[in-house]
Length: 461
Image 1 (cartoon, rainbow, N blue to C red):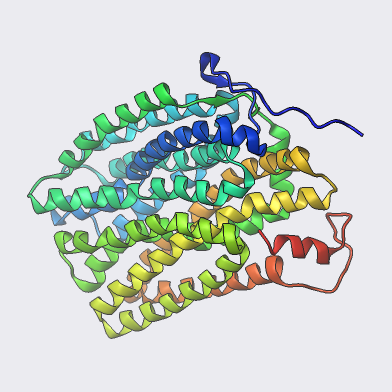
Image 2 (cartoon, rainbow, N blue to C red; image 1 turned 90 degrees about the vertical axis):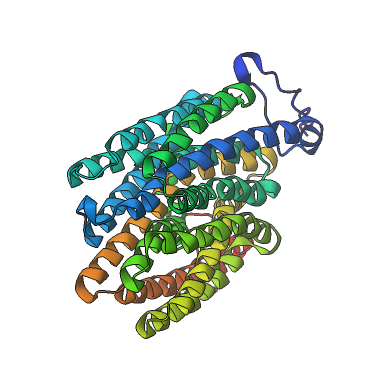
């Protein structure tokens, strides 16, 4: 019988690298690990928060762009679609940058890169600038969306499985709050009669501050190695793509609506930029704050169960939006939209909790246990998060394109909401069929254990 291995030594931080890290060891976690993990979480949240603000700054910049800019509603929806698209695509390389450069090092670099789109927008934000120039600068802003993927991959490695739902929810929720914060800042500036360059000027020193604080207080984990095999294994696993689809329903909705909410209020209900800004931030704010709660509920009751009923709620809220849109009721429409935002945030937390749980269940099904099972789960869940986050963010592109087409065809967003309702129904069916249904025992195509056992394990994620 093999003697148990001793707990890891206290982390050494020579060159800001921690050589030994085992958060599943409770002694190590209670004496050393938790304090280090929480410190890295705090400054990771700050950088990701500003990244979200820069990524979504065009959701408020378009509110400043009146008739003198010469852009149609369709132009503005196309602009925000392009920004969302780039933010989704860059999440894949950002995920693997953590293993190549280290979590601390990449946080410094990724925070500093946010200066590029911010300074560029500051330079071109005035009437007379061509639409193609706005599109190009919008492409640059998309890099802010990548900070989420690298931050989540990094923080996933710091925390034990039993704490991941709360930690990942807090990390992502703190980042998501970057959306309503920049919208609130825009509201204050519009109300004071200021222009878009005032808003951009505020963020330039904040970006520098985030990079400096990451350099001062964050750490790299030597155990997070560049593992191309993990990326390939994650891409070959069907659960990566199933979870990516579910994340389209939750985060894709959150980011898509964050870009589109103000524009829908302006174009469908004739709200002025100031009137739209008064309510635009409320939905993203509540959706961001509730995300850690979604993770906490998933820790307690299982991510699959919370996700399933969350899609029911999203479907009901979307149905109310359709009614409000057809009746042209701005009050009912706004209330239902805010509720839908809250549910997207709740679902964001529960779906991301499911990811490490799924791969942990797969490890147990393979006969692994202890640190070996935990290492397997960290390896594949970390690699899959970038792919899931990227595909999920593409849902935001689809939402903005759907709104664009709906306004072009019908002059309102009603047609788009009908399509979203159908999507949430499919997400509900997939969640139930894959993670909660208990079929009769049958051999699994990907595992040596019966499918019933696999399903029972997944039902707890």
